[in-house]
Image 1 (cartoon, helix red, strand yellow):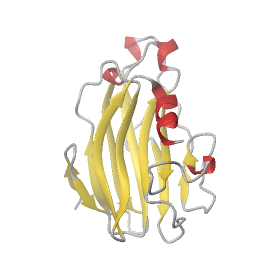
Image 2 (cartoon, one colour):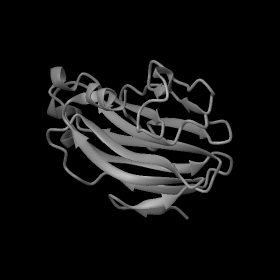
Image 3 (cartoon, one colour):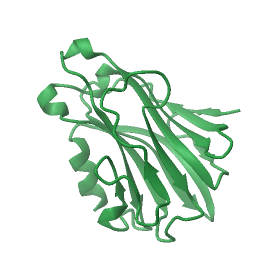
Image 4 (cartoon, one colour):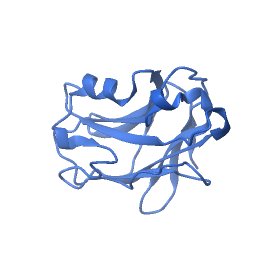
Length: 184
C-alpha cells in the first residue's frame, strides 16, 4: 500500500528498479492556450551539482549515460488520467557519482503564454516498483503556486547506502533556467 506524503516528509524507496510517474490537469480556458508541462531530472553529485551535462534528463536528453535513468518523453497536453510522464530508474546501473536525483516540473513557454502553476490542478508525483507495479509512495502538490512556473516536486537521495524520497514542493517563477543555473 502506497504512503501518501506531506511536504517535507521522507520515505525509503526500497526497490532497486522503480518508476517516477508525474501527473497533472490544467485549466486551458484560463489562458486560451494549452499547457505543456515538462518533467526534468538533475542527477547530482555529493556537491549538489550535475555529474555532467548529460546527467540532466529532460525532453531533449531522455537517458543518462549509464542508461540507469530513462525518460518516457514529452507529453504536450497532460490529457487523460494517470501519469502524464514517467521516468524509469534502475539503481543497479546508476553511476556511483550520483548521490541525488532532483525532480522538477516546469511549464514550457510559461511567460509568453501567461501561465503558472496556480492554473494547474491535481498535480502529483508517485514512485512505483517497476517490476511489480506496486505503488511505493505518492506526493500530491496541494499549495497554490499562483506566480510560480517551475516546481521542485521532490528529491531522491542516497543516505548511507539507502535511497530515499523527500517531498519538497518548492516553486519559483524563473522557469527551468533557474534550476539549471543552480545545479551546473
